Amino acid sequence: MAQPKRRWSKRRTGLRRANWKLEETTKGTCSHCHEPVLPHKVCSNCGYYNGKEVITKKASNED
Image (cartoon, rainbow, N blue to C red):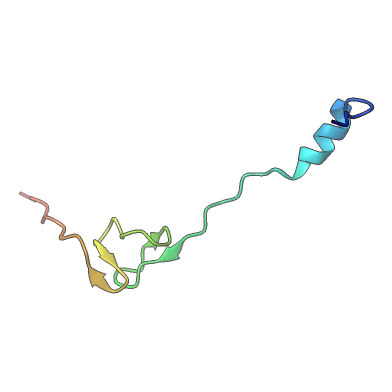
């Protein structure tokens, strides 16, 4: 099999990897409570997904 003539320099490797940046996750809004939510996930605030209640949230005990 063919082998590379020379090893890539650290600078060239760094230049190639310069565009490997972390991207912020895209978030949508819940159609029920309008809170930011990850796409294709149930809203942790109200328990709705795609306009339907999937998880029933327990009422908090406030004394």
